[in-house]
Image 1 (cartoon, rainbow over the protein chains, first blue to last red):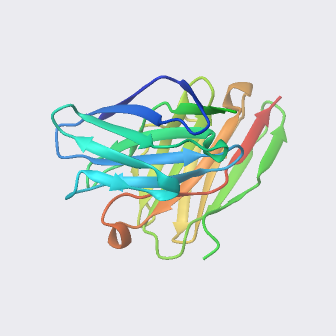
Image 2: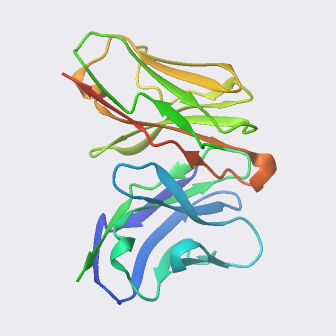
Length: 112
Length: 116
């Protein structure tokens, strides 16, 4: 069975500071990994994905994530936070042929 | 493409009434998913379809919930009878393995259900 654990349901960072959202996964097969973002009153949208190949994945809005198999992690980072980054972020895992399992989400707050 | 279209965006109903939520997936997508989102439980997968066939409905809470996909461009999620604990935002999402090589979901804007 697959699962995702997101550390911290709420994270606050100052504008301009590093954003780090943590995600650990469990999977018995090579995983596909995703980060989705949800802005208020909207559906989720894909931020970035890892399937195979390069372990450092770049996404939209300056975000990136690194797949670390030895640590079973897929943490999301952004060098400099912007007020518009305030949203809820979901890490997710799937097999290549199966449904996606989402984490419980991390709400990112940006402090002026 | 206009994206995944859900209706209604907001629904307020009384306990015991039937509720029908509708979804039009992106044309050409062969997977369709129904999720429910609440503060307490987060994002829960209710059911998903592949080529209009239900593949996994293990997340459907109970017999009061049913979902259908009569064709590739339309799906419904029905709750009968509705209860206050069904209040949530219901999302529909679609995807295409062929296009993305992985299960990348495009979500609709959601249907916010309030059962009084």
